[in-house]
Length: 354
Image (cartoon, rainbow, N blue to C red; front, side, top):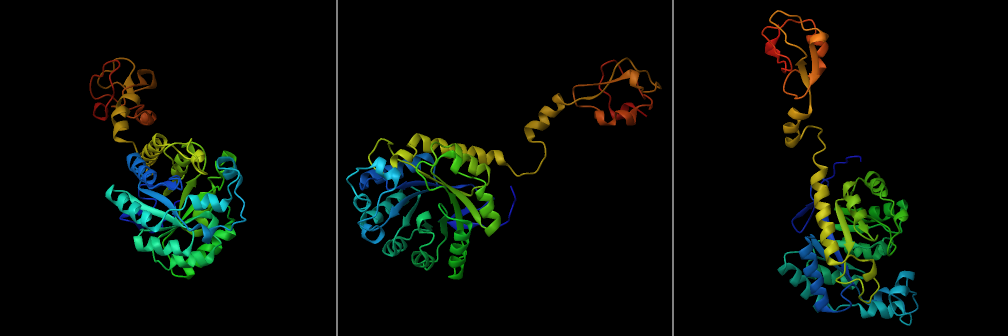
């Protein structure tokens, strides 16, 4: 992985960048099914899992979906066949007052509250609520009027890039920066629910990082927790993952989401991977230094050696422990004389030879 030094970005006091812990977003999305109590339970689950932030979706159905819009194939299989996309979205819409309530509840539970706006009215609401960052979802990467509105809020932006070409990502970034925003985090994403493994293309994270000299994370739609963990090992600074209280609940996104215990396992695994990544400096660990004395070898007397005897290959061997002269000096000490009596199997030290 190519290391590109980029200034860190701060969201609600948490620094995001390659030198900091991965920022984990528990994506509640619309898995509240329009129920505020269920939404609060999702916040509780995100807190219990150890996520940094919990994120919902804010929209007004009439501003987002036409009444003739079809559902995505995955939505057709997870919701009522007689229900239009507009009706589905409308049933999942939360009121402005509920978003205020959820934001206050998240704050009281010590977790960052985020929500993705899908229309300009929702941007205004979330700015009033004072969300610390704005997420632009994959489907809106070409929606420049909405992007302009988000940029005007002057907060860090998380831009998801599912379905986009590199050129479309470039257009969006240029537009965002031309309108004054600098703090942008890109999320690689495969917009499919669930995303098949062959479509994930995690190496695209490195392409985005190198092409735009930007912080890059990963928004995951695969089943299970393996792929987001791999993304962290590859340098993702943000991980976003859908979760639900119960995959059997009705609704479009539940089946492609983690359940609470899985979310908790993912967060733990991410933190374990971070600890394992280390500094990148190749040197023995503290634990290895102790083992090195036992596992490495030294130059050892094969027979008794008397003072004045020459050290020849016939009287020397190489054995554990590694507390004496390093075997790499074997040829260097061959031919030198013993200063003192050296017994058979005794580790040879530098002060024993002339």
